[in-house]
Image 1: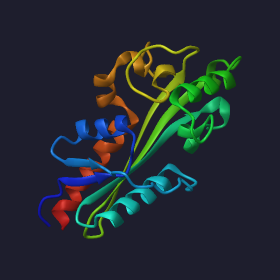
Image 2: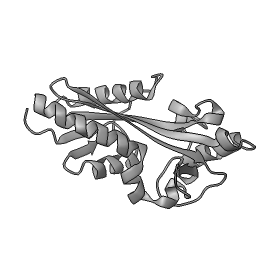
Image 3: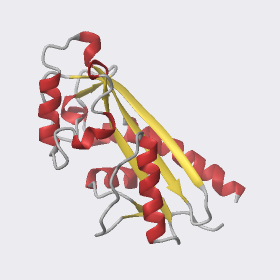
Length: 199
């Protein structure tokens, strides 16, 4: 099959691209470019990630295509914001607005209701038709106020299990090792290696 270290990432999120490049240093991963991305209409993280990867592969069938979808599931909100995490406060909502709404929705919610987890689904589609998938989660709880300056999304209010600080306080170096996206990428990378040996 030859080298599989060239890929396009179907995302305009610079934080996600930076994390993926850090996690796969042997790959040359480029952003999707200035194109209109498809709407996220799937009912699961996996469906959305797969649709993004298919879109990227159609644009350039000569390279591997990565699609990723991720979000936050909060127990006391019945799993919300879930697949709408990036659009929780509206289709054009900022991270700040999403976090503000989350804290408002959890006002007065205690203990188990604040338990939460990050979920990431990562899909890679190869020029030869290969489809590989990695899933990762990070368990934790939602803090009562923002803390920390690093990361993005809900990181200023997400405290991982076993830690006393938010992801934004723990920092990007910690996140590269322990995040849901790191877990999904490692799982996928292992499968990329397995798939490469088979082809």
